[in-house]
Length: 172
Image (cartoon, rainbow, N blue to C red; front, side):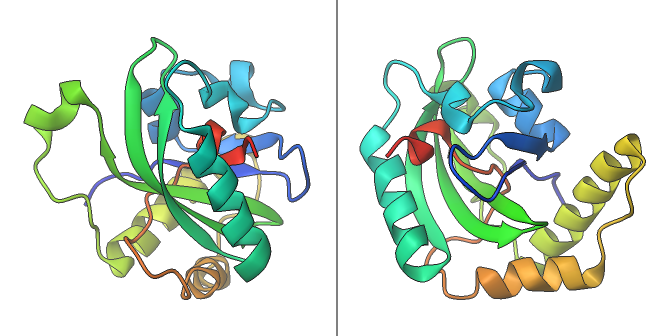
């Protein structure tokens, strides 16, 4: 199983980032001190697909859950395409990204990027527990994971990898 790339934001606009997985920070080459309290627009840059972000948020507002293929920009300028699934969780909005790819990663991909729901749930729980433990907060419960899974049950496409909001996905 692989670790998950996720980001959690506040539940209301401008959706300031409150937490993220280590994989999210590594993927986007960012640091917590540079992102906590900022908006997901930290992933905007030249080449970001702002229209995809608007569509993601429109779907989310209409259905309470959404999934959209997005392109965001890593801090070094590398464009990364990923599927973002957005649900309410942990008192905020949780973005889970799957099918992540960039030109430099194509040769390294060892799977099709579609983890099973069980893999996502197990990895999400472990990842969020580790992040919460560092803050001295209580662990994620099975109810938390179930709520997130149920929130995402209406999604029709790929299972999620956690990257709450690709920045363009929030720039509507």
